[in-house]
Length: 299
Image (tube, rainbow, N blue to C red; front, side, top):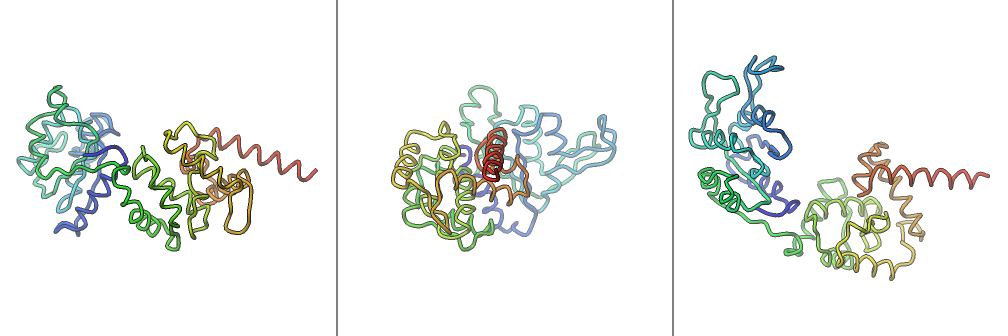
């Protein structure tokens, strides 16, 4: 259990990888991302002709996770009808496909995550108490990143290696800036900030100037007061942001960041905007400004 973005899936993958089932499959299902009808088919599978469009047999996620682990992400969003079916899977260790005639045995570990209070949901009648006790064997609470800031450095090191920036490293001042943030988006937000910083720093030493680019990109409304204070202080101290090769203005650095990001995602504007933390419309407007500026230079 933990807030959104605290790294619940990362922990689940770690548990799986360091268990006796580590050589087996790891299957993750986001219960909040699919409507009830589709979620049932995804989890339990279906037989040919079970419903319109079921043109063949399809194994569900439980079957695909056989001998391994399945993660039911945001279990709190699972409809009550499917909760009853899940309870039977946990009790009997077998799964019934939609339209199937006989149950199929499975050997899996079930991991589940939520960002809500399941006990409150039980009292409200929106989560089954018997399912809760079936799942709540070894409960783990993940605290928000703002309450475990000492995890930032090891998380950053792991992230840089995984994302292909083995030479990237945070300077002490950068670490201080990161620790002073409130991290409303938790680990997910941290990884977005690190990704952008690594791009700007060309995979080298990351200074405070490479961080907090949301404010530069014109999305200050996403910053909490504490974070805004940190970014404002950083920009007061650094009137021009130092790029790896030369001293450039904030706007030039913004332009550099945008084009580096577009190059990284093969000019996919939607993906670039998401990585930069801005809307596609904002990105489009900025690119238009850059083109106009380039035309003026040529005149």
